[in-house]
Length: 335
Image (cartoon, rainbow, N blue to C red):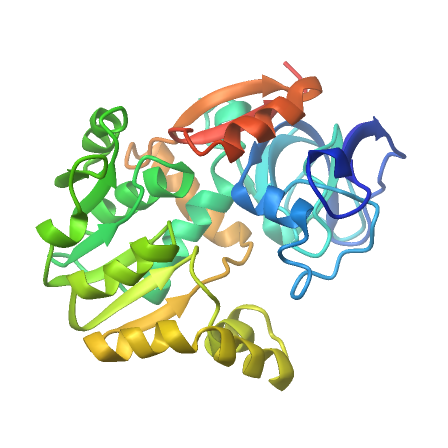
């Protein structure tokens, strides 16, 4: 079968589309004939080696974090799914494997694709959808009537975050370019700030929480728009000690390292009287079923920017890295 293999850490040249052996499902696993896979910034960060300290991969490895396809066969004890079921998943972080014609996935990470949803669209839901759900509901505990600022609302995670925040009953402010304004407004954003001509920190204050998708100077400024006692959750800043303990189950050495690298951000948060949390999402078939229910109920509209054939995955990754995608970028293995 064809797969995109990471042979060493580096740039695009470190990956290779090649033939690899077909995987076999073990106990509690299912073999998926992959129809499509979603691309995410974590893919090129993995390729570049930016996550080596926390992601112990044995190279060469088949890349890819999320997929949608059809169950081909199951291993012993995998009784929740049967051959022919249409499924999607955020695959296990320590194994990856979504950028291939076939992949083995643990049963508890799978969920059935909603009726009427095509597999290319479904492939873009797991990672971004779970990230937004876990950040806003599980970490921030966003409640009806509260306000939240989401930076970069037209991107892959942002398009899910706006809709999930509205489902939770919140008022949403976000940043977008003139080309992304119509999209984020359609998804429910109450206030859209054009970042090409104005600064969000000049327009916003007293927000109950913020979901940072940009990092850097944007994150620094975000602390100032959240009211004291509020919370800033980031997926683009620097990890803090709770990230090591709660999200990654790392020991005291990495906890201390995260304490050190995040000290300036945590000090900035304390200065503004807000809490700071960096979140690594965790795969979950049960929460993916919740997202499927939102799609079925018409509360969640997965946004796909562009679909590439699998043979052009290098071009798809370059397009994603350019940072202009509105919604998700997908590669399709099969019609």
